[in-house]
Image 1: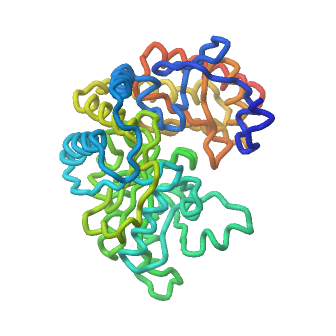
Image 2 (image 1 turned 60 degrees about the horizontal axis):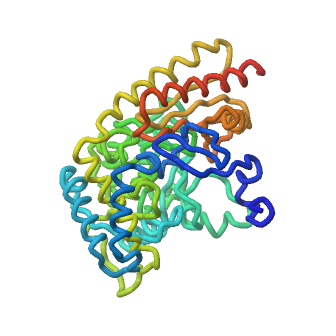
Image 3 (image 1 turned 90 degrees about the horizontal axis):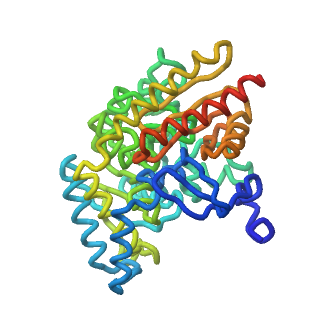
Length: 413
């Protein structure tokens, strides 16, 4: 039925006709009872795992007491509690005096709103994005996404976007901050002074490209020097996936705008922008959306923030260590094969340097009871992104299954 009536854009329904039914932690079961280990975590939105016991109990209690589900842009007790715990536990310790803006929870909506805010505040049209960037699937988000769109879309979408080289794009011996700085300081460079620069600290769908702390600090200094807003997209790196609650904490950044992680509410739809108070200027009713008042997401989000504050996820460093040690040892097991491993925290990737290889491994992995997906831009890069709550035994079991399918591919090369 799904194969016949669901849109063809839902490709996985056809390539892997498996119907999932139950999930717990890092394990998923299909409608025939087969077990799968989740190394994809729904693209990062389920970083805290499936059906967290505390979150589930809070949601059931909320529903059983006839609490309000949807309030659009109006206030609710659930929203108030979420804002209180998020500010107290996450923003205040980082000295982030940012306002919280809830947007509609569609992929890329928050990034698109961030671009609109930057352009309005600076009264400039241009935005700088980076090679291999990925910021969502709305038209505005795609305008700052590096993957080449269809030719008929590219003119309207990218008319005010300038793509610059990301950290180490030309190799470790060329500082691309100096490269970008030269364009900005030269009035004859052909590059207009941008309203904002949007960046990912770790380009997950660009093939797990990772910016150095020095590069990120240099980028912030550049923004301050030229009066450009720094927009950090934490969609795939927030909520503890790459160190700290936000990955930019390690570099000591204080961005003007933050696109918060998809994982804030444990997989329930929510989309958040954090912005400096001076950027929070709107016409009455200008930023209203039907799904900005999703009370279930607020309940789940508040519970997860409280769990984070209590240290319930502190052993993520041990799981990160297991991932790092196991995956970085893989290339030595396959000498004379083109296998490159990159990553940090709970975000890792295997680059095969062979077009289509990641899709092949992903399909074979599914047959071996493991969910793992290719990077959206790079079909030769396989993403390894388990939930941060995964138990060590399940993690090692999943890594063994991954080793089996990677070995199958490399033996065929």
